[in-house]
Image (cartoon, rainbow, N blue to C red):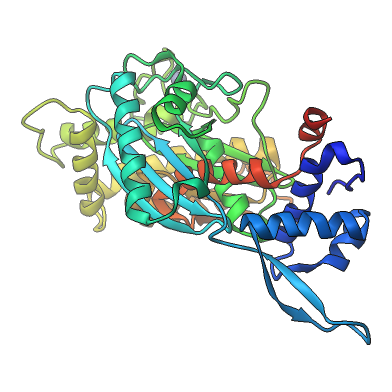
Length: 412
Ligand SMILES: [Zn+2]
């Protein structure tokens, strides 16, 4: 937690320090407490509080009586004070949420990603869906501070560019941030999908036992979002978390699928929904679709596969093999990062959750390669399929609410 400074030129920084303290306090904080915690003068605290109250970001919430002195007025974050839009672009589905200041979802919607994913068309669809979402929520537009978009990587986070998303055909160096800014009129932040999902887990749970986690993201592709010591890990370029080429062990007598990298046994390919559906068709578990095996067909057939896997049989066996590959890869990730929590989620997660949550803890427990220095909690995201969109919106709120030394440098 940074201390404040009384220099008038950095009023904006002090304001975010105060907002951040109020947000983290949970039940709210009094002006006296804020002065004590920041080292700012009573007059500075009073001025900033007035500005925050006037802007509607903070509200007065009753009085607290501490000792013999005058009762203190408690300042709390006002959940309806500001909002952020979160969008998650997955190759098969686009998710939209509107998030209030306390991280509460006030509206959400979902649509299938068009099979013709020309960037300009996708941007137009996103802009119109965002407009409809805001309209339906009844939230005044001037309370929306920005839009966060979670996209498959690799990305150039600083420039807001989707570089070459392998599963979005034709997406090479797409200037997504600027295109969305132009189409919606909102400031835009771009984040990699897996990182956004990890942000959502950190932001929406106050639990300190989740400071070191990996988010196992199961979408059209696979990756991990990483948080260490309550900070997400982005790496040099914002592309940390590419775990798809971790090699997994193939049982004797089985053929591992060939990966785009030329190897066999890469976890990303082994657990990819399109691969599992293809295997189920070849094994006669599912009927081949009448048309091409495109994203819509995979989505539908994957639901059938998961339903069949509720009972023992070949469908269950296909998902159990996927769980085994996932568990194999997790051992590498857990040993490498020394985290104690695995959170599962993503657009395809809920359909495999029963099988994965039954099998993976058991597989991890038996794996001789796993370093056993502390227990590891394996759990599903409580946010559900909106998680990456929620995380993208959290980033916008976080950007506005959290004090950073970089903001201090800019304002001076
Ligand atoms: Zn590979």
